[in-house]
Length: 130
Image 1 (tube, rainbow, N blue to C red):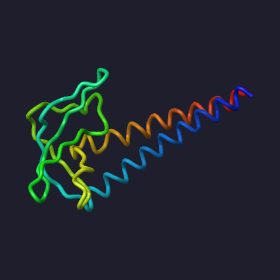
Image 2 (cartoon, rainbow, N blue to C red; image 1 turned 60 degrees about the vertical axis):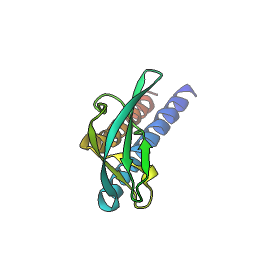
Image 3 (cartoon, one colour; image 1 turned 180 degrees about the horizontal axis):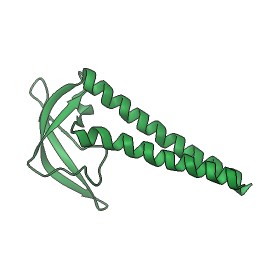
Image 4 (tube, rainbow, N blue to C red; image 1 turned 45 degrees about the vertical axis):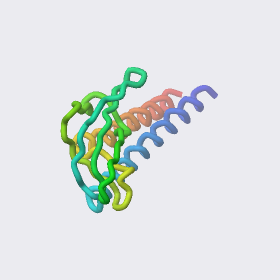
């Protein structure tokens, strides 16, 4: 019974993380194809429970200011205050903006897929041992 739960748990987490990776890749592909591109400026960095999240500001069509924080953060994804970064957002939805550097486009989907594959591999190993 324990082995069945372990297999189920690892497989579920693995499939969910692979799904996150596919979703991230889909969003990036849509932004690359249809997204509105502009430049933003890192105006400050928020520190929340030890995690640092940059706050990026840009001017949307119509002249109003949009501020956002990237949804992903971590090693290799940090941005310095005062730096200019490429930003992309779906047409008509500047509040859904994303940082559009190569690292911010690729790392979240690759990391999710890699960790998901590790969990799926663990599920297979647990199943084979039982």
